[in-house]
Image (tube, rainbow, N blue to C red):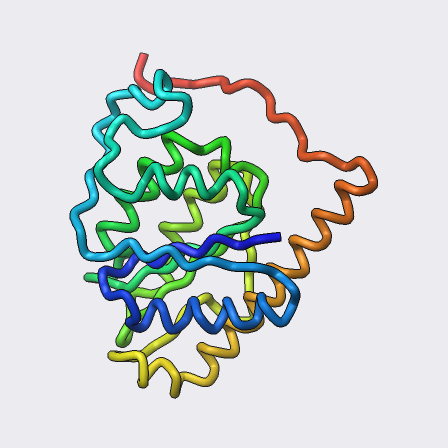
Length: 208
């Protein structure tokens, strides 16, 4: 089993990475493999709603950033954790652009797989940021993994985050809950229990 973790910060080993690393260590102790994907500081395109991904076999038509790599890696992943720093009380623009395109083009690679969002902030805006990311999961039939507090850490630098004992504890408990749910799903599959098939979409427009 493997958990794919996306670092939505431009800083390779900043506060968000520190939180994800704490989860990765806990997953390792639980016998779960993990990989942290760094989104880096290069530009990331926004989704333009062209719909060409439907003609590309579930890949974004733009292939000059990290989006299609994430979609490809998602095929072999059993769970996901998306991390973001907080900018002006919301997630980073890069993680939102990535998730808009990843879920629009490759949503089938994520459906029914557990996911969690974590946020890192100096002070505030964390719960609002986590709430935004959770909405990607719930529209795609993904079980949302919780912890013993909201999934956040606080600090202005990695050393500050390491002093946030409750925040790091929250990350570890999140890792344990993710491992537990993945093992439960695997045990269910061994007993022939598969993910439910959703009804076909009924789109209702409110403007007549």
